[in-house]
Amino acid sequence: MDFRDLLHALRRSWWVLLSTLVASVGIAALTTAAATPLYATRVTFFVTTPSNGVTDAYQGGLFSQQRVKSYASVLTGDRLAKSVADDGSLGLTPAQIQSRITARVIPDTVLLEAVVTDPQTPRSQRVAEALAQRFTALVEDLETPPGRSESAVKVQIIAGPAADPAPVSPRPARNLALALLLGLLVGGTIAVLRDLLDTTVKSAETLTKLADGPILGVVPFDAGARRQPLVAHGSAHTSRAEAFRQLRTNLQFADVDHPVKVIAVTSAVPEEGKSTTAVNLALAFAESGARVLLIEGDLRRPRVADYLGIEGSAGLSNVLAGQVEVDDVLQPWGDRGLRVLPSGVIPPNPSELLGSAAMTSLIEGQRNRFDMIIIDTPPLLPVTDGAVVAVKVDGAILVIRSGRTGGPQVLRAVADLRRVDARLLGCVLNMHPAASETPYYYSGATPKRVIAPAKRTPGGRHEMPPVDADGGVTAVR
Image 1 (cartoon, helix red, strand yellow):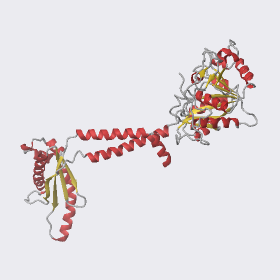
Image 2 (cartoon, one colour):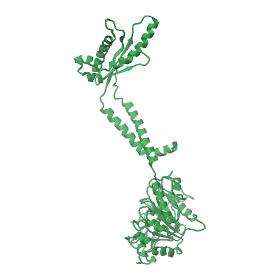
Image 3 (cartoon, rainbow, N blue to C red):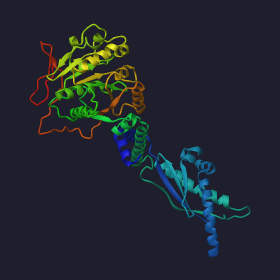
Image 4 (cartoon, rainbow, N blue to C red):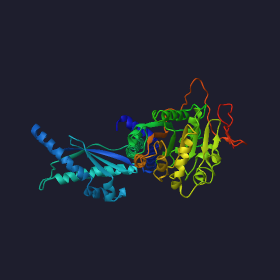
């Protein structure tokens, strides 16, 4: 992962980074506010040995440096704490006194610093004063050889005891700064791990490698697509509508020697946008003047009729069961050459119907009547319907949702198509985050967007909703 990948990972998981920052700073603020302030009193000791001459002074200095390290342990030991606790005015036990004392040897010197912390400044000073007196006496007692009255080491107080005016703990600025750094570190780590462990397809390059096939189109994400699924209309010039026109063009040139006329649109798993892709692709072909038949081949969870605002209770399943003729349930839509065959009644055996000879006969019977036949089929991984239909058509389009469909799911879907010897024309990367959401236009055209299904006329045709003053389409209820 290079620096650019790192930035992309942080940008994709910005909410994780923000959450960890807020959590860490919040915890630090609450902890700081709830902490009891501690005040410190410091006292510094100078350790020396009697000497005669320069040589003795040098040797004595080395000796003192070595002894200072031991005196640090004496300062924090229980013997000195018991001695200080003998002063009943402090109101502390030896263990409490011992927990309040810290010692620090100043490197390369014979100086020793003791710090006494306590919630009360006056008591901190009294403990430090008692500590200084008891410590010097204890060292002289320890360093006086038997039979002699003078100690080999002298300890003198050269600074303090002096109390710090501000509490040494807690330190709000330091705590918040550390919390901020910790939040950034934890959030950044989580973001990078999420990106490394995320196997979903997020780029056309990745999808090309997984499917081992071309990318026919990249449809940008549109927040209003769920509410307004139909965008490919004659005067629509949004980036999403342009993507479907690009998909149409790529299909027209997919195989110039053997043009495809019957296409199955499928996906790996549900909720990838295959039905909206099939509908908008059919509208894009009809927009170019082609005679288009859109077949709702998803007999399990049909959506096409709902998107187009037509009656779907009679359709493909009734035709395949021999209950009605195709022309009896074909429905015109819009003012172009688009005809729609809805799903009809949901049958108990969708796979058998779609794989039947009647389905083959239906496709071949309509091949010469239309320039393009588009069949919306169920996802490949949950059921076999999509693969069953893909065998009967000129080729299949695999719709993959950006950032949701996993790489292993793409591999399995492609393998399912190849297992039945179906032809994969290519893939469509759907709902891909666009670099810019600004629509683009040609020749100064004003954008118009379909936001409602067509209405049925008394003659059975479906007309496009009226265009409003802004170039949009007035919703029909």
